[in-house]
Image 1 (tube, rainbow, N blue to C red):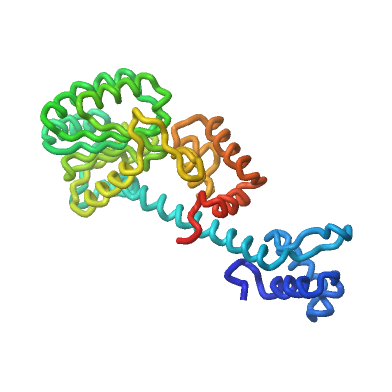
Image 2: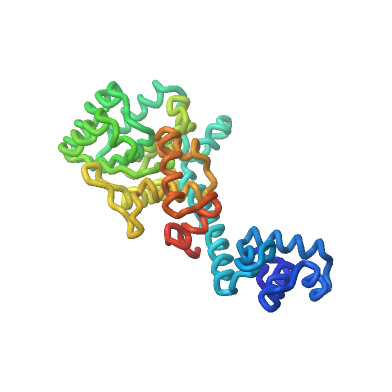
Length: 331
């Protein structure tokens, strides 16, 4: 009956027997249930792993079953944490669809798909972006992941930005929260805002991306090296998905000049993202890369969150996060 919660039939029978007959030991349980002693011990190991049994407070060396109302809550929280982690992995894969499109196009140069143009080398990429910016008339939406931007690249962007803004193009730029620590990037973002551009930050961005007039997108083929090559996408279905992705991230991002808003649970956007990435099973190093921070900072964030919940392991942290409401209870 409890198989969907991770408890097999034998372990469930042992748990029920321990609730009904608290003083039974291994031999008594085996005799009562008509199973082998090894099967009972194996079930006790599973029950212990699931926190459904505990050492007796009165008799040293004996085990007691936790009350069913507590035990079922533990099993439900465990399952909810696993479901939440799975859903977050699905969402992460969906958010990375643009990057996958780019990588697939790079793997198939001999058979270009309709609406996909490959750009090879930094010179060609910059030339095409310059041409697209020159022809833009309504919108420019940008994902700019990574930490602070170099001073020379910021200065180079200002000339093109000024032309677009003077033409009345709506410019929306999304940086990562970590750029708040870069004086050069913050100064550029404030300059852009003063001229009518809109700038927000988010803890995590799925890929580098530029969308011109909602009809043409440029995405690098490698998230680690944007100069290695890029693809230019014009397919209607692809652009609809990419624009929806941008709008979704934009709606939850914070304007650069404001302080970070916290959730009802007292979490910052960056902490919420760390919880999501931990639930996906990412290491501290992988989280650091996603947040564009140092591994030390990522480790400090993760350890701080675990300490707040009193979690001794990352799995326990996932269970307690569901119980606290930091991860969704159901999908």
